[in-house]
Amino acid sequence: MDREEFRALSLVDGASERLTKVTRAFESRFGQPPLGVARAPGRVNLIGEHVDYEGYAVLPMAIEQSVYVAFSVVKGSNVGEVALNVANAKPQHKSVILSLDEQEQKNKQKLELEGAMWASYVLCGVLGLRDDRPEAFQSKEMELQMLVDGDIPAGCGLSSSSALVVASALATSSALQLSITRPELAELCRRAEHRVGTMGGGMDQAVACLAQRGVALHLDFSSVPARSMPVNVPDATAGVTFVVANSLVVAEKAVDAVTRFNKRVVECALAAKMIAKKAGIEDWRKITRLVDVQKGLEGSRDGISFRELEKLASTSCPLKEYSMAEIETDLGEPIIELFRGSSLEAAAITVIASASSFKLQQRALHVWGEAERVEQFQTLCTSLAKEVQRSSDHVAVQKQLQSLGDVMSASHHGCKALYECSCPELDALVDAAMSAGALGARLIGAGWGGCIVALVREAKVTTFMESIRSSYYNERGISSSDAANAMFESAPASGADIYVVMSN
Image (cartoon, rainbow, N blue to C red):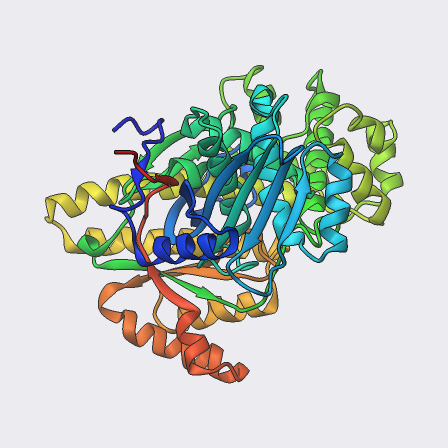
């Protein structure tokens, strides 16, 4: 199978319990069976947090938990417009009908007024496809009908929101009989999700579209679209598994974007500009990503190491915290003018309006340290796979597994101390995981809540989970059933699929 193409699967032949459930829910809501169901998985990022939007590589894997969007399209003069009719299988999420002929801002206002903000991610996916294929939406009277279901917990760092964007865009492309490749879908969904206000880098959408069962992906964001390469990560053959545990602190990155996620993006951009200027890079004003500092310096010398970049961050951004005036003095221009016309302009305006200080050195140190850890993790995985295949040196395998765990733990420390995107509950959960015998553990996703991932010896998974249940969940009065649902083993799963009713 060509991994770049979506091959429609039979909805009947692939009718799992979840597919059957969403199909029946659609028929109950709309009075007829759907044309098909789009599925997009969540993800666990094994290493590489907050570096994709800085142009660096990440190493995520898809998980079995997914978002499902059952869909159909009604065409004809009785519709009168291009409409989007969205429902959710979960009753707490309100249904809504939007006119795609209406201005986008008015649709956003309607979602807020009707208490259906969850559907903004569906709208993102549909509008992303319309941006890419406008001819499919012109001069047509039709109603796109969608019903959403899924088993990815929201706000827990497993990318439920991006999975919903991808599934919605894929559903729309199938409903309108548009051909689209996996890389094309990933890129249009990356751009589309900026509509909700977070300036993400594309990891979540890429892994949802490109993931392959049995392997993680090394996704390199130094160019657009990202370059993807499969990576064999340690599994049962090496005697280990990955365990995900939910802190049960909900963190919706779009809600606090101005003070958290987007502020980090703007701080990284300011650090990149300041380091580039002081390093003598001529086009420093145009730079908005730390990878472009590295590229600019490599153009004038024979390579530059991450350690050298980290030293530059410390010397070029010596203050632990900067006021706006101090940044403007160093750069010689008003901050907002340095973002004028860039993709970050809107985010920068809102961040600057609400922020009194900025941390530049710490953000750059985390990004360059984390980018190096991704390289280390990938190298260790490659070496470990060869060592396990040879089955020759048990001691060497155990040493490499511990090294992988150490890289994961170092990543969490960077997120906690330098990027400040952890929270007390995540730190406590990581500590509980390490005390329970994990080789390494780290937060996943944007942070400020959500989940951790731990590398655990397979033979000790049961006792590991029991220890976490006792030391983290029980201490917080969380029931045994909720605690059991908050933890799961995970292996690399497949990317998005489209299921359709096959004609005879």
